[in-house]
Length: 458
Image: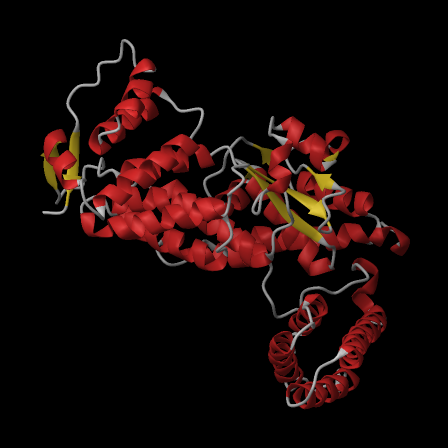
């Protein structure tokens, strides 16, 4: 029985609005899912929660067929609170049962991961199998298991009251990593390599923290910033923990963590960065990392393609996943201009995730999309044309619209680079915009622009 899925389902229900009948239909779907999950319980532990869910399901069905006013809304609110209370009771009961077991002294007071469910570390080792001819070395799994057992063993040295202390529990995991002999390096290829060699970067360190946390019930989550991964206690980022430094420097605030890596506080407004990642988002992050690390190996490009696709599937709101996907597409699909529409769509999806341009890499996305829109990518099977022919073609839609859009994206890449001003000059020339061409040329003094070429479908 996957109680974690049950608890997450109820938690999601608490956040859903219930102002209209359309809202009720969504709530009922989620309640139906909850009842389906609870039907797998053969222990009787969730009987009370199941009865409450069925009553709620019946009540929602009645409301969807009749009027829905203020008193009915109050009733829905009461039922949602009752579901929450039932889950709290169930969680408390599970803790009491667990604390009676012989292993309780070595465990945290919360059970977040069922014994038959894999930690994030084990899932990542499974993900790496294609990199190791279909099977990740068993030694990597053994090293991960040894580390998790070490954390459990060391927990016995902490009185139970400290099991809820972020500083004590984070310190314990940090100490166990040191005790297992791990040393820091700037960058590690893969998680399995980090385990086998016991040489870790921020990714390996963070995955070790979270794997142990999932087994022993600590609310430790991963947080991403450009080029770096660290962990936090809970999801508010009040307590951040750097996994690649000494104990005395490990505990930080989100602001000090940003200062340490010379990042702008604007990242706090990002949809991807500086927030606690879900398990799927962390798996998305790792798929993207793997794709990025094998992207330059010609024989592994098809594999990088698959990893990058899976990354977006797991984390559709992760801008980093879209950026890696774009890198893969530029390399893997460069032979066929038929992939141009998909490339443009991926750029636009990535940019939609950072409309406020808080990510420092967003400028580059705007610049590169403008290049694609103006047919400046040299596709292998495309026809090369000169400036005059392109100017003629771009007098009508859809090419004219693409050049107009490209101009907007190049402006959005501000401050525009020398290369960007050259492209602005080309765009202005193609569109017959003399004012824009004059503005661009002022930024290009001394630049040898050469011949302008474009690549279009044959």
